[in-house]
Amino acid sequence: MKIETKAVHAGDRKKAGPHVPSTTPIYTASTYFYESMEELDRVFAREEQGYCYSRYDNPTNAALEELVAALEGGHGALACGSGMAAIHMALLSALADRRKSVLAANALYGATVSLLMNVLEPSGVAVRFAELWDLDVFRQAMQESKPGCVLLETISNPLLRLAPLDRIAEIARAAGAALVVDNTFATPVLLRPLELGANFAVHSATKYLAGHGDVLGGVVVSDAPHYENLRTISRAVGPVLGPFESYLTMRGIKTLPLRMERQCANACRVASWLAAHPAIERVYFPADPAHPDAAVIRRLLPAGLYGAIVSFELKGAGRAEIFRFMNALRLIVRATSLGDVHSMMLYPVMSSHREISPRHRERMGIRENLVRLSVGIEAVDDITHDLGQALGPLP
Ligand SMILES: Cc1ncc(COP(=O)(O)O)c(C=O)c1O
Image 1 (tube, protein in one colour):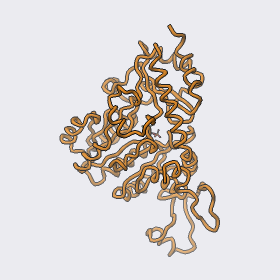
Image 2 (cartoon, helix red, strand yellow; image 1 turned 60 degrees about the vertical axis):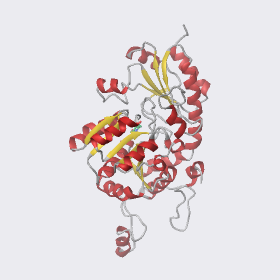
Image 3 (tube, protein in one colour; image 1 turned 45 degrees about the horizontal axis):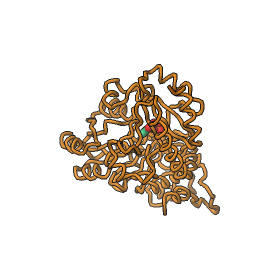
Image 4 (cartoon, protein in one colour; image 1 turned 90 degrees about the vertical axis):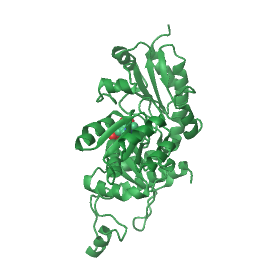
């Protein structure tokens, strides 16, 4: 089945008694009743299919997990209470039987950097950052740090770099390191990391998967060898998603391919419009033929689908000018997220990358005049009109 079909059907309509509901119900029960202790014992022992306790498994979550695993081409998935919980679970599972060392891309979502430096490093995990876009740099960093795990984002936040995932997967696999890929920005509509050799694909489901700004959630998809570890660690840590959020995420995913198609097309138009505007210093967008990863983009992304995030720098702007510009937006929502049906804009130094030191941010190339726009499904002319009026009259 193609991804558009899977998005609508996978995981749904599980028979739960004599009736087959046409969409997955929200199972709010925290625990389950069995007629006999013998039956419950068999379920606990996993000799019989069933549910014991919602920290272990929940039928609504199981449906969502089956759906996202199908979209990503993975063996199984775990629905978590946030994208950060999902990244944490993936890293713990990846490192369980390996050297406690992570080699991470040096452009990552701010809280992911914080998880590595403020949570994992103090607990004994060695953390190193490197330019994973350059394979020579990556190979050298692999040799020097001998990591148990490599971590990167398919489309990096907020400068939209694309790493040669397929090659990185080969190198990591040969070195015995697990590869964890945050696929939040690309979604399985654009890229499926497990099909390219990664061991884990992670999502902030808060973003494109749910897509409507009403869910905080995350999903880890893993290959077969890591799946049992993932579930065992989750049972002990308890990062699970609530069933209502699971339901909303499944509902959102039904239109994921449609939304991505529209949002990506809108983003292409917005990026071209911004590039031609005299107040804009630089536009970061993967469709740009001068993009530093243009060859990887041609090889890995489907034609015409470049993601729906456009980052750009305003000429000569500092914090005050950015505040003035963003305060003037009327349609585009000033908000700290991305991937919703409505367009929204974020100021990375103030929000997503706030927790990172100015020196580290500078090294990442995130400047004071950079903003990140998540392009929605609105009519594209309304989006560019709003940008135009907020930028002010042309000189
Ligand atoms: C690429 C990426 N990964 C992970 C996260 C964390 O997700 P959540 O906020 O759902 O914990 C975010 C949040 O913005 C993100 O942009």
